Image 1 (cartoon, one colour):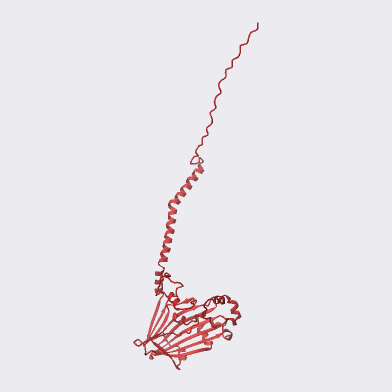
Image 2 (image 1 turned 180 degrees about the vertical axis):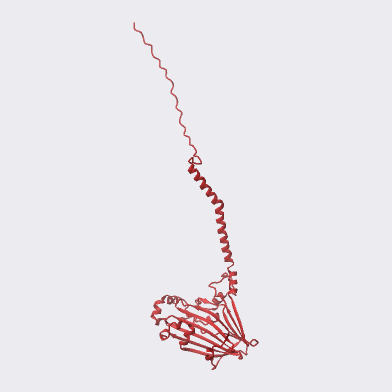
Length: 353
C-alpha cells in the first residue's frame, strides 16, 4: 500500500511596508569649511566694515567742508573785490604855486556787475557806463577809476580841467562805422573778414576804432581861441623833472588787428612850468595810423594855460618811406604823420563861475 505524502504547508510572512524617504534640506554652513575661503571672507568683511565706519565719514566731511568753503568764498567775493580795489587805488598829488595836480590810478572796469540785477546800485561803475554810453561794445580795458586833474588857483574863484575815461568815450561815435576805408586794402579785408562780419552783424554800428576828439573836461573854466602857441623848443630841453606820472584811460587791440589807446601824462619842471599830453593813438594794421594829441602848458606865475589839439593821420600806403617799427611806437610815429586839423585855445578861470 503506498505511503501518502503529507501536504507541505507554506507560511507566508506579510510583506514589509516600505517607509517613504523624507528629503531633508540642510542649511549650508555660514562659513565654508575650507580654511582659505574662510580667511578671505573674514578679511574682506573687516575691510568693508573699516571703510564704512572710518573712511566714508571722513570723505563725506572733507567734501562738505570744501563745498562750505567755496560757498563762503562766493559770499565774500564782493568784500574781496572792495578790498582789492582799495589796495589797487593809487593817488598822487603835487603843487606848483597856484596849480594843484592829482593823478588817480586803479584797476580796470569789472566785466559784470556784482549786485543782483533787480537791485539798483548808484555806485556801480559798470551800470553807470552802460547807462551813460550808447556804445555797442566797450574797449577791452576800461580804466574807469583813472583820472588826471589840474586845478587852477587854490582859492575861489577856481576851476579845473580833468581827463577821465567816461567823458572821453562819450565822444566816440556810437551810430556809424569809422571812416576807415578797409575796402581799399585787399590784404586787410582777406585776413580780417571775421572782424568785418562781426561789425556788420551789429544792429547799431559804432566806431570800433574808438576814435575820440576828447580834449579834457572843463569845470569852472572857459576856453577861447588864441594865436598864442606852445613853445615846442622849450619842451625839448632837458630840464629837471620834479614830478611826472602816466595814466591810462582805455585800451583795445581791435580784435588783434591793431590798437587804440588813450593815456594822459604830466611833467612838472623845476624851472617853473608843467606840460600835459593827452594822446589817443590808433593803428589799424597795414591800413591807417591816427594820433590825436592834446598838449597843455602852464607857467607857475600865470593863471591860465595854453591848450593845443592836433589830429594827425595817414594811410600805410603813404608811409612806406618810414621804418615800420617806428609806426608801432606812438611816441615816435606821430612826428611822421601830417596834421589834418588843429585848434589852439587859452583856458582861464570863468568869471561867471
